[in-house]
Length: 159
Image (cartoon, rainbow, N blue to C red; front, side, top):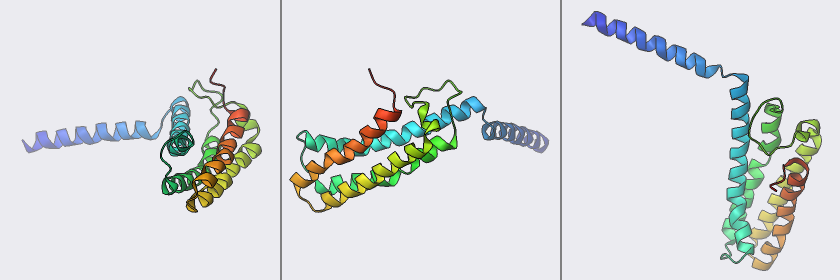
């Protein structure tokens, strides 16, 4: 019985090692897919945070604390954008993305646009912290404009 358990344990350890080793060495295609998925996850989080702010401009109840918090989150995540694209150039892989190839040819501009998002999100958060609804909602255009500037240059049209 002990011998059977030892053999079984050795077999499980061997299989676990091989599975773990295989997981540690994904193919370049899988690395590209993972890179694109990670970028998309960050953009989903950015959208999750700007959505309620945009909704306030369309009649949702005004909540200055929510607007400030979400803008601070956007400012914290924005520096990840160019880092994620610089981590792996996925142009040569069949990954689903709306990112234009121009990103990797214009990384300096792409990084500036991400920094513009950091700056505008922080500026918006400062305005929202004041609690003035008119001023806060008026400042949304600046925040949204920085998103739009990057999308215009580096994001595939949704047409």
